Length: 397
Image (cartoon, rainbow, N blue to C red; front, side, top):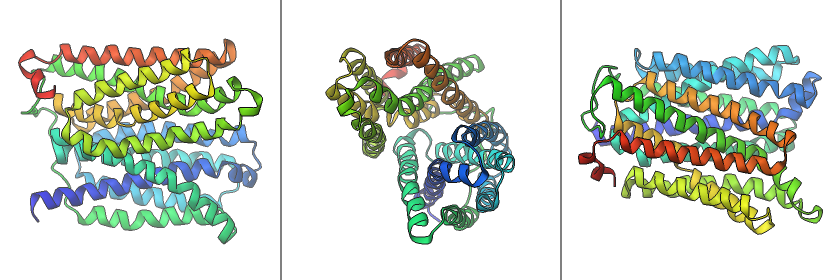
């Protein structure tokens, strides 16, 4: 098999896995009321499955980072897919919350392993030229997230039960697992190996500094993205006049539509423009977006403009950051797991913290805090420049 053709087929494996992760995550969210009714739980109680799923994902990131550095990656992906398929197919048979919690915790472990694997192996296959493929990877998640509510709706209206949505997604995992089994896995990357194309100087201390800065960058970025998407509806509903509150639903949906469009646009852009230039533009756009909302008086126009621009600006930040990490150092499974865990912690902690600000201070405090986190990311991004020798900065714009 020719190298270019093999890389494309390997990429198809990772795209399919990330699309499935979008289906898994949004199928779970879309069926929360149904699961609550079946288990006799309240909505607040059933949301614990989201919490334990997130904790399982963090554990899956940790364990996966060690596995991918020791075992052929496609074997790990196949095992994770089959485990998730079995557990997802069992969900409709569970009628008690205490049984659902450990089940979704283990699904979270498989989810974390697959997410980490798809990102890590994409970097290993494409190296410093991963930008378009990383954007395509995360675009596929958006496709899965978009399709999941449609699948759930079809299962309920046409087949009479949300059970079919879980069985369909579980069944879909099986051929993807077989596909991963047939396609050659990229060689395991050795931790001590130096990236010959690195823009940063070789050395353990430099790698540690880079890892700390990029980890913090992703912690604040992912926390900001999830916090905004989780709170924009409530914020808009609170700040808009009563006759316009219906717009809050459309604004919340518009953010994800803009994110998906931004990731699609990022595929060709990242193959033509330097990674660091695109990240700079994304961060600048994010600052302007939140600034519009903070200083625009929460009018309907500024909410729409700020939300749409923020969605487009944030869309490529995560995949471009992972690509930049590959351009700066030797990204192993362990390093990817550290970056993923940092992202996961940001996604858990910052939305909760902003929720406390919403309740204790005011709705406006959420947007001010989000602006602060984006500015912190801008500072961290600037620090990365200091870790790259001037003689190499021209390579990235």
